[in-house]
Image (cartoon, rainbow, N blue to C red; front, top):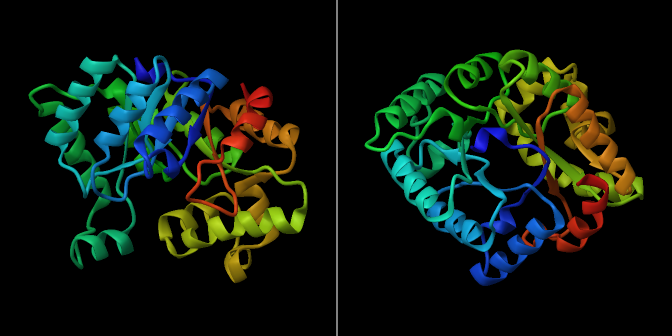
Length: 290
């Protein structure tokens, strides 16, 4: 089942958006390179069609949402789609579930929508359990950063999908979840050895999260300060959150997550062209990571 996910995966919005045929071809190649999972985000709209496209194009890779936003889909729809896709393509669909962020949810739906995220998550899981074909705990994980959401992930799901964190957080997640749970950590990477260029690409990606309290609070818990969050992020923060350098340097960071307790690491390759799938970089990184 999907809670046995290991190895190295790929996290990419480009696997969701764009020409489905081109995405399918890329997915098949990524599987052939040895990447064990393909992760896509959710900001509304049809997320299950792209999941089905990726599952149809592959035979063994886990396909996962990182994450399915609970404000934008019902639990009933989620359980029904999971059952249908699993029946068609085998038990390879891991539903990563998250509460998203207040600014975007209040903008997309209505001001004041985003309330009591922990309680909303618990209610969503209750509804998955009560669905006509329940979505089993081993086939779902939570976007969990703080201790309360990690605790919920430990008791109600296969584990956690931490995003934009350091190896220290992988250790914290492992301790919170226990020895057998899934800790599927996302790690941003820039395959670039020039410090100025690499940090510019990394900072451009990280900067958008600096106004989101769930991320900033988590970084503070990990030992960063207000100074690290100023002016687009200190080099110390950027270097801790995004691994940059050559293939060996990036592989070392992935290994640090594993040594800290991650059972699976999904890399998000960051480039100057975020809408394009970075196949060149993923091909180059595969021998070092697989």
